[in-house]
Length: 612
Image (tube, rainbow, N blue to C red):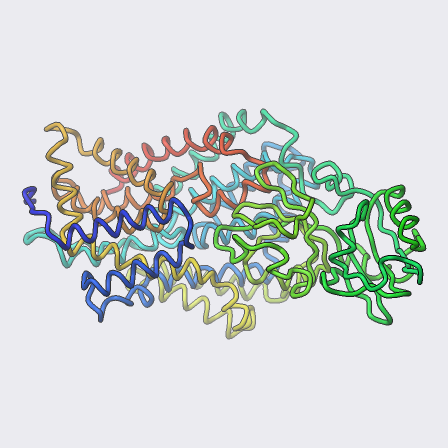
């Protein structure tokens, strides 16, 4: 390869856009998907990507595969497959903690081979909660091993995680810019990385069995199991007491007052329900008015509620005459939910979101970085990783969670399930995998075959399929793909690769260079997400391989695998989803995740070279 390439204006422009992307991702002042769209527009305006090719990312195999895996995962969830799985794991574990952890993490890792990692974790959070509540194993001891296994299991197939889904498209697009005489890069088959994924998953299981487990055992009080028990919420959030009914008398100062105003009164208990006239409502909106004869459903300590009732001329009743049905645990209760990094709630307050009015959810507290916020909680701007404590009717919670703006951690009675479709879903899934084994049919077509089968047979409804797609992830990927093309076609990737190889000592083994590329990719993933790191680094890795005399496919595969090694920071969506439920601090994540991430790079380089 020519290492004396001149830095052209187009190269400078592309590198500037890459730098701008990294800066915007780091400071998070603008949403990641908005940043991706802005970069896409700039690529078109500057002519770095031809207008007719600019939006091809939206129709690429990578994006279609991501959408299909999300829908397939939703189909399996609708059949109650994970409820059966939780029961099976409990039976096989026989009450032994180590066996339970091993089985749960291994099965989750295998599941992640055909589903998007965040989707798998969203499905397994309630499973882990249920297992934890039944066995007494602290949730903090389960979630980090579970998340690591899911990340590693994504390497079992070419559709298990976003970097591997992107890899084939990036390799094919790189063929247009290869020097003459260099062999064309061929797309990898569906199960090409299976041996590598097995090695990584095995390493993760062994790490937490013999080493990482010691790190998780240092603090046994954190990450207590979420459950609908008074003791848990009392210990964790200070939410304690019983439910009472307060009837508003004519002399009460609450008459004519809005619910939101009543909540701010000194000594006010948690106001969970309101009955005015013949209308009873759980999670009444803040602007709802309290009138003579209105009944309030409140929660708090008996003395606290009694004092509030006496000070405000309210009649106290410990028997639930009006709200007995509403507060039935089989119908309503308290739950916990984590805010994922793709949520639209980020940066907004509960008041702005109108959780009670629009969704019937009462926000009781927010757990952020192990600090519980329960005063003026409706005015607190939400962040990714926040744990929300909600009180609601279960059906309202189920409907609200379909928007994917939060992931419910607490195991609760779900909405419509279709257990009678379980066998049909399993057959469709098996047929999908068999089709995917054929090298003649692209993975995107194979996966969409499964999606079509689930829709035709009624495993999923069409609206449910639309709701299953995380459009923010899809949009982010589709908009950033042309940036990778521009890196390659402009020569910027070749320029960086050539000058990098020039500065390395002569005779440096290829595996050392591969390890360096893997480390750099992992570092990029910490900053610009695994999708951004893959798109930027794969073209560069291919050019490094050409400059060093290595195999471009090997370097590209090492790069895609290394992009998923972020086990330390919330920039990996999987890790951000467990920090709140598990009660992990940044120090916990780095202490337990960094050694495994480094070990994974070594395993990835060794396995890829042995396999290819």
